[in-house]
Image (cartoon, rainbow, N blue to C red; front, side, top):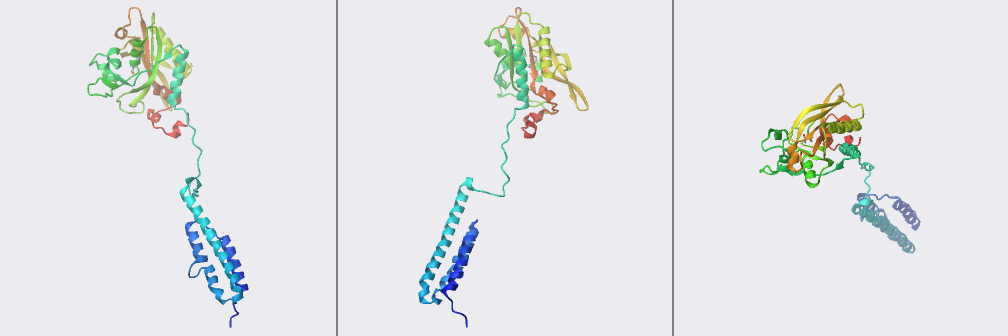
Length: 339
Ligand code: PHE
């Protein structure tokens, strides 16, 4: 025959259960539910089972056993309540949510200046030191400013060289194809002498290749005064090229044609490439055509001037050894973070 179940037995078992209750880990909803069933489950929860044995105790011991088991049950319920409310808080407040499977947080990348911005700043800096001031003009232009006042008559074949992106079927509104319309706007709003540059974005419907894109940047230059000659133009451009590329730069001044300058010339820079090199055109230039001065009401008998327009992307490619213009617009951090 079995020994009778005594208050002593029950207290020892209750004590062991209390330790298990305190040690249990309740880190998830499932763990909390398993914990509840293990201790308080109706059928075989271990605290429930001890309650069921109270009737086996001598009547004098039952009251104390009841008090002990009630306090144990209360402790189980407290732990459940605490676990559920912290699980709930973790679910609803993002700052307390910790997902150990996520990759570590990275430091935010520091931004850097775009290579075209570097080049624009150094070009404008050089010309400011040569006494030029900076002008601005709209990117949406009309035919008169972009072409007609610059001595491109309607249907002049030179318009074909500037594949224009028109914004209206009439052909009168367009994205400017060059910064030269700023020459016109500046001369209309002031009086000679002029000594300005105009940096900005221009647009052409060109076939996209390693050296041309549908938008790019130019810096226009214009000097109008008495007695300005081609020697002044050449001097300014050579000063610029020496300051920008260094005094050992190789330059080539080559005759060209633009309707708004006469005579006209382009400036080429020797482009050292891996496995050779070639000449790269960086700007168009020339003496301001008398028709242009007349179109803005300046007397060409008294004033003369020179103008130039340089391609900023070309300068950036030469400066940094970039062999494909398109990388300047791709916004690839691996490229941009090098500047
Ligand atoms: N506007 C010309 C171009 O975009 C460049 C240029 C500017 C040429 C000023 C002469 C004088 O091709």
